[in-house]
Length: 445
Image (tube, rainbow, N blue to C red; front, top):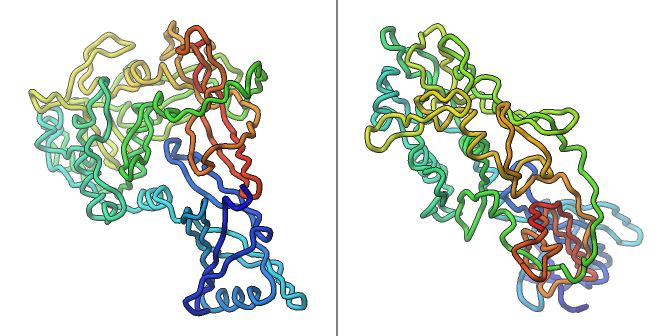
């Protein structure tokens, strides 16, 4: 497969000519990585270097001096596969007329999406008494998905992405029932507006609210942004059971071990007088030594307390409610810890932990509890704590990204298996060897 990858370079300002680059001068790795802050988003990167000499030396210098970059095209089996900008030139030897190009900028939808997520906007303000937030939030707030859709339109995101016909397909919760309003425009029932300038929001804040509360993940599928369940994160499996037969080596990623995991909502979740065990000090705890993971949601309030007063309520941020479609008000639900009916109860920290945090958590089937209550059901998926040794292999198509690896299976019952989730897939373009970095993700053997 020595001719599987070929290369041409466009030196800006050197005429309408592309120049073939000898593969022996190219040392590149193509890498797919899960983004460290967006687990469902896959980033493409190109790493390594290109050595140029003789006339290419002059072309590259002219291109960088005048434009600051040149263009590289990579062909897979004769067809265009990847176009990148080369943005760094190093190790220049003017005597030998040799230089090295590094730093390759891959223009991907994933990178575009993450940049869009940092842009600020203002969520439309309700102008209402807290009573009407509790009873008619559909008339006095904004549907969260409509806010996101409007922002996608106003920021020009739909110029790069297609609208999602279904943001999230789940029997557990309906994203169409999430409504949001600015805290700064909530009345306390008798006083004037609580006041305050409208806080600017970002898509990152809104998406992280949904990711954290529901234990789901933003992903890009077929050029559309949507949410996925944790059990969908490793759908596209590569079967390497033959190559990995009898591999039972296990090591642990101790950097991610924690003892407690909890939501850090706005202080408004603790306002209104008295303790509420469905809201206060609710955490998921593991049978580990130390460490904690705070899921920062301090801009958001989910507690619907009709007894709050202006002095108790922090106006900085947003209130998010889960509606009853019949009444237009907030859905009541029994609190997981208290056993009492909670208005907006679906979004109590304790109820969120109970409903959405029994799978895909930081434990390898070890004991854990939710809000102090022992969890008897073992998780089906777990986060990256069990490291799988690096797996080198040669793929039929090195350009295909595999979300997961089937590392062991029961011949008599293929539903009993071990699956690893891929965090990095790196292909050396000089020899076509692909190396997977992965963690055990599901074990049903």
